[in-house]
Length: 221
Ligand SMILES: N[C@@H](CCC(=O)N[C@@H](CS)C(=O)NCC(=O)O)C(=O)O
Image 1 (cartoon, rainbow, N blue to C red):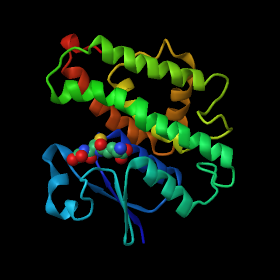
Image 2: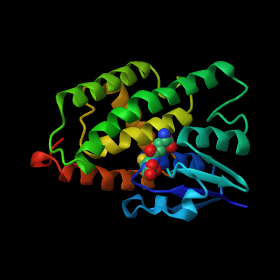
Image 3: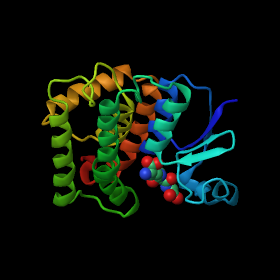
Image 4: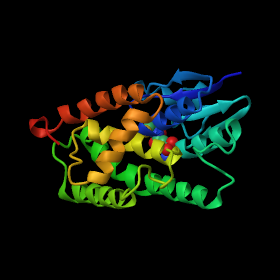
């Protein structure tokens, strides 16, 4: 029986769970919940996820939300000990978890703060504070990637690369300049070329990025 993923492509967390399913070659039934049409507030979706956020996973009678929790669950359940999230290697798993928390607590919020204020709060310029915050977080990510191909420093990508690449792809599509962060730029290009299902992620991130750019003064980030 396929797992069901309630998904909306403009959402980076949602795209990260779909990318994880694609990396695992899972049979997944993608059900679109159109947030622009407020479909997440329909009683049928609230009865599945009372927090009404996507992505939401339904695996038989088990329901889970929070993208990073979904991604680790999918690997643990369907590819235990895969290099994507190797439970037998405690230190690597801990490093991946650190990076997932970095994404959830620092990176994604800095990107979201910029995009939401432009898309939904009529801002046409990015404040210096928000710009500095995101560049600070990117500088950390650039340091993590010094001398390594993947963010958890192994020889393969993991669910940390997937989650972080999904977050980064939205703001890169809006035109954010990665030139000051050469390790990150190299890593991001490698993610684009390597992650299974990345084309779909790219297409959705570009639609989102174009929407952000179209609301900015002179259309420039
Ligand atoms: N931390 C959550 C964030 C989920 C989230 O904020 N989803 C947004 C879209 S990006 C959403 O569903 N918003 C609609 C709502 O909460 O009603 C995750 O990583 O899954």
